[in-house]
Image (tube, rainbow, N blue to C red; front, side, top):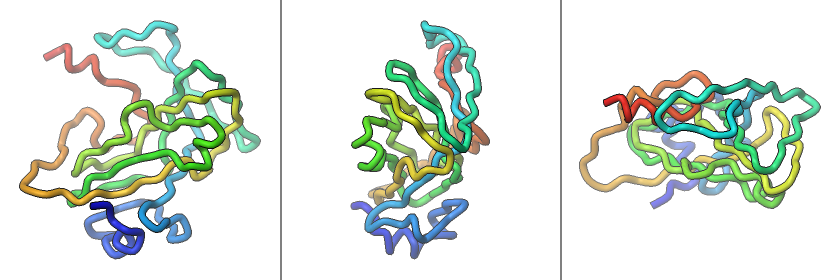
Length: 173
């Protein structure tokens, strides 16, 4: 079951943390998250799962940044989120999708217990100018049935910025 906007608001500050929170961004069954003012891009044209891949930081100026098709951009939300009671899910807003902007390649599914900023895997269908602070995606919450162990992995938990893939750590075990 998905929580309604009223339920998200009722649990705000307790089982659900969104910081900063602005009630104007609350929807009937989700909350709009905004884009931070930086992106990461991978420097190499070929990525290797077994090694850390070098990245470069791009600032998104107030007058916007033009994104190119065929390139992966990693961004993050302005908002820090946490929940130990619900499964957080992330989706693009229909307004961004209708511009050909995708905000996640595969990682829209969160784990109960995740705490941090959401890294966005941004790509576009055709060139598009983006801006910092824009409502780029929405978070919604599912209830969870049965006993569970909350997400506590150190890999992405309590991040403070954009997180490139840390998959290479799985090969080091």
